[in-house]
Amino acid sequence: MIEARHLRVLRAVASTGSFSAAGRELGCTQPAVSQQMKALEASVGTPLLVRTGREMRLTQAGEALVRHAAGIIAGLTAAEEEVAAIAGLRAGRVRLVSFPSGSSTLVPTALAALRAAHPGTRVSLEEAEPPKSVELLREGDCDVALAFGYEGAAGAEEWDDLVVRPLLTDRLVALVPEGHRLARTEGAVAIGELARESWIAGCPRCRGQLVEVCEGAGFTPRIDFATDDYPAVVGLVGAGLGVAVLPQLAVESVRPRGARTVALEPAVRREIVALTLPDLAQVPAVTATLDELARAGARQPAAR
Image: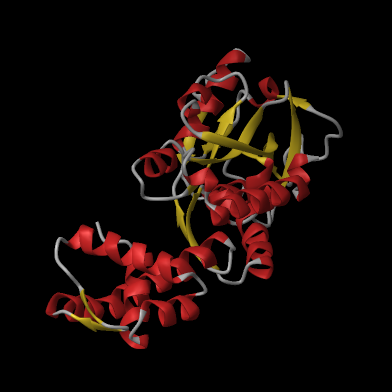
């Protein structure tokens, strides 16, 4: 195998015409140059230099190798510089997947801070709800995935093979029309008090959690509308078409015109996390992205 250091020595010998001159140029001794040339000739299996007194002349094979050496060394130098830039966060790319309420709250704050600190790092964003976002991570289609899991619900073990960075604990709140009998209530409201209401449900995972919580309170919610779009949920509630239970983070991502939030009891929470693969967690740009997401999560009102 040809080593880059041997090619650099060969080019120095070819340009200077002697081992001693090449040694002076490279900052090493004449015997060291001679040893490296012998090692290179052994690697390629043919003589590269013809020694004529104190002068060195390239053989045909030597001329061919020197001709290619320039491109090889330039390519290696470029690769070294690019890797050093990535390692030093002067460059890099991170593919991020987030669920919608995370995209409108956590992600903008985190990415603005990341760009300010490391302007050479580029982040792309795609939206997907878990478990789809987690699938994209495992399939190699993203580097960081935002996901969530409800307290006490099965599913956290799905992340056992991943690096999990907790971001915040997000409370669920009831959303009712402004004219609703509970709209001015101070303190928490038992979810059972909404048993006879028409319901507007969110994403499939949130919808399943809603049904589970309601059934735990002794009733099955009558879901008249279902949509993955949080602004649509808020709009339907604001129009007086029903009530909903949404994560606090989702409510903060829209302006709930015509609707009011009400605290619920028993409290229902979801844990929001950033996930990555163990190997990716060692990449500086990924680590920096996780750090900024964690800072953004700590600053969210839902986390307090």
